[in-house]
Length: 123
Image 1 (cartoon, one colour):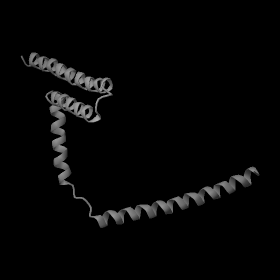
Image 2 (spheres, rainbow, N blue to C red; image 1 turned 180 degrees about the vertical axis):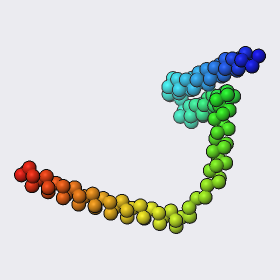
Image 3 (spheres, rainbow, N blue to C red; image 1 turned 135 degrees about the vertical axis):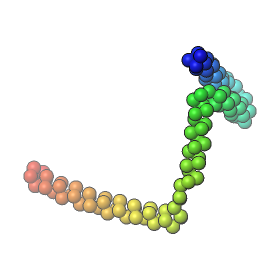
Image 4 (cartoon, helix red, strand yellow; image 1 turned 90 degrees about the vertical axis):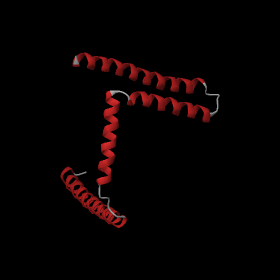
């Protein structure tokens, strides 16, 4: 019984995904076909078609899982302790200084190795 129910759910999900894809394709094709129409009207039509397609997609098993994942991710983002502006600036300056020092060291190393290669090859 469970296997039969899962197969029916998968078949129904395929239909929902098909409708979503058809709506998106219709939005893209309609936008091209009615290129002489107002941009505002076309933009609203595309947004509405994408919203309806999204509503169909969210009714599928994968869509529900994606929505649940997004909700959980939002909860986790609220738990993050974000740095203050001063901490972010200090860290940025430290990274910039360290990058500059490393760039100079690598430049000096490159110059030294080039001199050694020039001495060996006589170029």
